[in-house]
Length: 240
Image (cartoon, rainbow, N blue to C red; front, side, top):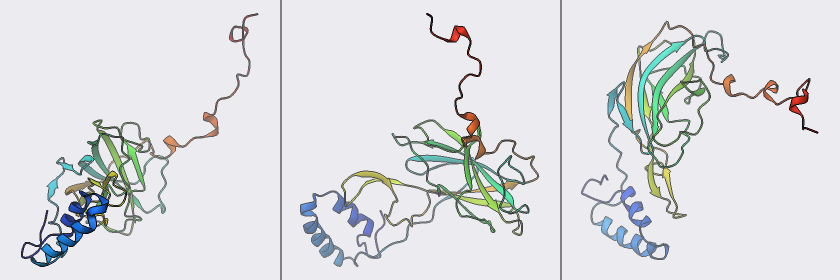
């Protein structure tokens, strides 16, 4: 835990201590902490140290998940998945995600964010799909790694970067100061945490199109609904 200039308590330390006492005693603890902190410079906010930047293939631990970013590639076509403009392109990050929490987890839409690239149509992926069958990402099971495709759309007017830095989001398991329940939450409670780590990955280009499309593979169609048999045979019916 970080502390301020002359050794004062940080806001995170104060909140953590308050979470450990019963609601009826929290006001007493708050008064004591404020008095002590006044001797050491107050409860000033201290920025977290920057996340470490690592190479592709290095596992980043983010609390309830581990992420290994493996590759980034550019595609012009991805099966039936359609670009907003024909001149745009797909940026696909391939990463293996392993859930380390004890419960099934749906990774957040901002699990991965990109820097060093311009012209993205959205800061979050347009699609997230399992690499093994190109079906859309669903709940991931604990300790069952899945190779996942994270798909962004980039404007055709923007340059293709030589490399991209991928930031991996993190969560911490802590008690909610209001409800008393324990959840995987933002580290600082304000959604402004440093990422668990950053991975710099070279961008591959001129690859053949991906044959399968993430979205249509999970979309239900009328043809998938059960239909009555057109010509039932006697052997399918009840025996007199």
